[in-house]
Image 1 (tube, helix red, strand yellow):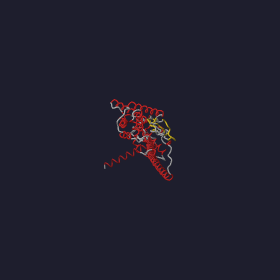
Image 2 (cartoon, helix red, strand yellow; image 1 turned 180 degrees about the vertical axis):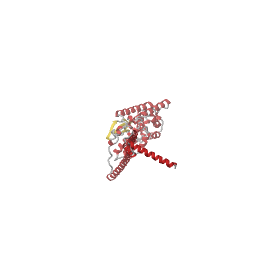
Image 3 (cartoon, rainbow, N blue to C red; image 1 turned 45 degrees about the vertical axis):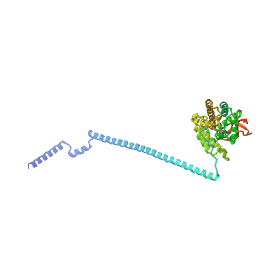
Image 4 (cartoon, rainbow, N blue to C red; image 1 turned 60 degrees about the vertical axis):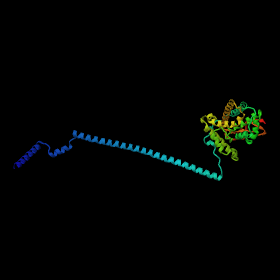
Length: 390
């Protein structure tokens, strides 16, 4: 009951309040609601609106930056992918080109082989299309210098015989001397006289002995520096002479003589280039005394097996003869190396080809080819042999 009376009194107060407000002209609740809907925004509302606008702008810029970064990333990725693809394609193209070139060469070789089998040999391509070897091979020793070296050797041989061998009679068997001479390469075919005839001249005192000894020394000495010789006594490069001794002599290539002679000449000049200690200098191949020391010693021993019969037995004479013999062999080797590395071919004249009755005391020299290896129509006589009538 108390609560009910209280509520009734509150309602009465509220009603009276409304009536007073109405009487004073205050807006009603509906009017208040309508008015509030048209009231301009307050400061708080402006702040809220600006905040929303700022957030919208930031969101827009963030989206734009994100889009630009994505585009740049895609572009860089495309560039890298393009480079990788280009490298791979280039590698495949190069490999294809290489394999294609090899295939074409094999096919070309097969066609050449088939054409050769059908049509016979084909001409070699000119060397102008390849490396010009003439720009690398050693320069030739001048012809005048070659002749001067030969003349110097002739003088040395004469002095050696005059100063180192006596003219007294000796007591030795002819067959023993003949065997020694045969071992040195003296024969009818090589020197023009039989060994017995040469031994007979050596046993005669005086000028005949000197003539015979010069003949023997000249023949053996120049044979040892002759590329065309098959003598086992040589002071030219050992391996080169061993190879020459293992192949057919050039004279046996009858129909192919011209081409084989050019090939052999080119092989010799290229071998000289490879043996040269400083090939870039392109100077003639020079003698190294240390390299030929053993060969010179072997040649001196072979000669002395025959010559020692004509040397005075005293130690001084023996020592002088051996020393002078060594000097003579070294001088001969210098000429041999100059001719071996020469671009032309040469030939020594060991016997009298005209009358066949004269003894050669110093060999002559012929030039057989041009400097490019082409053989001359006929040999060119550079120096005549020194001949003595028997």
